[in-house]
Length: 105
Length: 514
Image 1 (cartoon, rainbow over the protein chains, first blue to last red):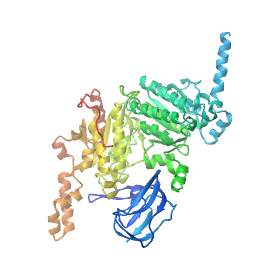
Image 2 (image 1 turned 30 degrees about the horizontal axis):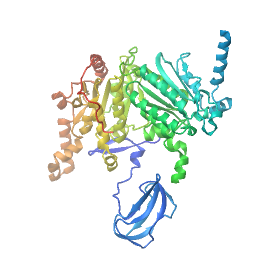
Image 3 (image 1 turned 135 degrees about the vertical axis):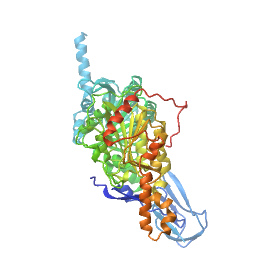
Image 4 (image 1 turned 180 degrees about the vertical axis):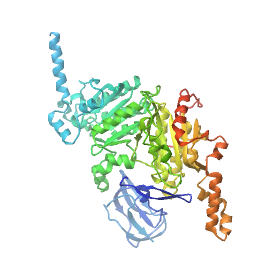
């Protein structure tokens, strides 16, 4: 048996089949709907500018940060009216995809 | 000058160029566990069959002091030869010469042999071992890559194209292998990526080793970019030679016919598949129980293992196999396995290779991740590939054939030429448990003993529908056969399909879901 697979069961239409389960399937993450309060980096890149401070009120459409990625200065806009709860990165930080950049409330 | 003196002059000139990047560079290459480009060609081709061309080609770049540098053969060897007597065109990048970097003349040599292979309708093998574009030659080297990609594309489906990655293959260079039919990689030697670890680190701050980013294992197990994985260059060459015996020289020919041989007796077809449809088994053993000499040549062994693809021979004729693998992920169709199967079906169709499909699957894999990964589009590739294929299509339903999976796996409705089913086959809209839960929902929920009622209804459904006879009564299955009759039926079907001729409506090209 290969080391990356292990015996297990798979449920298809109420049928429970004995089989080996792939690592990819084992490690799949449960789906989480996007939360407009949490701003994530949608692409790996560098935080070029931060225009807001903690506690600041923001309106939908306000530019919060500039994320430099793939030679493009990407504007990160707020998807809602709210207040900046916390900023998780500093100017110049290199972030991978899906990193929390800031949280609104 | 007398002729023998001129001959000596040629010999001296040859000797100088044949050393490639020189002894030091060759030593370095060996220290990396790699053979030189010339050694690679020699170990791949039949003895004394290699004819080399463009030995004396040199670059004429002037910028950045390039005019002072001499690069023997401009870092690539081209020519033609034979493998087990089959003609092949070949190029091999020579890492000992300027890191195998691709400049204008280097690329012209490659495109010359590509044009030759296409014109002569013979297979092309490319051995990649290159640091990438020769930066000193600027846009000329980009032009070179573009010319190669274009030829890869127009030759696709006309001549077999094989890529062998025996060193780095980075940046734009990776797209040539990606456009070819089969990619061979060797553990610890092959490296393929668009952007290397250095760039990823400086731009993104992510640290990863070359091996973890684009090593042979990664491309064989995770990305699906590679089709054959070997532990050494020698093993890799053996795989290539074996592949060449299975495929035709071009799309106008059929693969060579070998002496027929019976399967080995240790594969007892009656004993491989468990009766209980929820128990796993290795479907490769079923294939081995059917093919000549029990010799099954698997492709993409380590990727999307829930579907098995590869070549075998039936009565000496090359046959492509597509089989659900209940041992892995219950043999479901998912994004990766659909992609893997569809491409192989199209390969067989392009090169006149009949397809045998062995069916045992509970359906498509459920899940948000699958739906969001586009299992609709990827799953559709299987339907498209089977429907479009005009080569002989033979199907054997071993056990489960439920729902969309039944339709997708080379069913009569997608124009399979012959559909056989074993007595253990269960051809139905879904498995008995799921079906009973839906059809008899009221009876089950209103019963005093829901579990007992469910069991009873599941049994009822099983006897009525979980068999091959309903499908056989409609003619969707041509024959219900004993497992031991499988080879006989398939051999006969392939024989009578030898001159199969179907005409599809004229079109420029279809739009498969990719």
